[in-house]
Image (tube, rainbow, N blue to C red; front, side, top):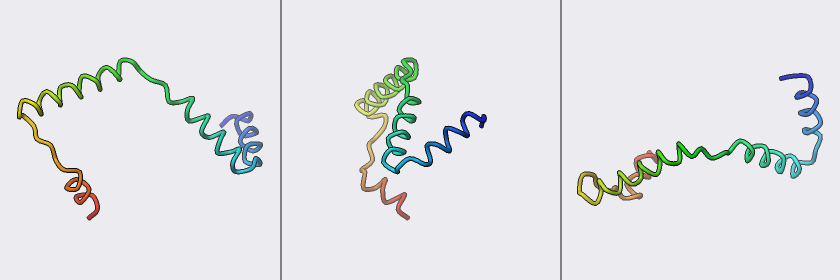
Length: 72
């Protein structure tokens, strides 16, 4: 961390919790930028999976079954 970043962090840590939470939310939101290329890849993946399901190439699994697998 640079000296400036350390100073900012020190100041931020002195803020009330609710203000720190708002700041964290703003910072995280600034990192969440959409990527059209990745969005298009996911869209194609979803369309391919739906087509495969409708064609009987893949089957669905009940949510209850999936959750039980990970609760063990």
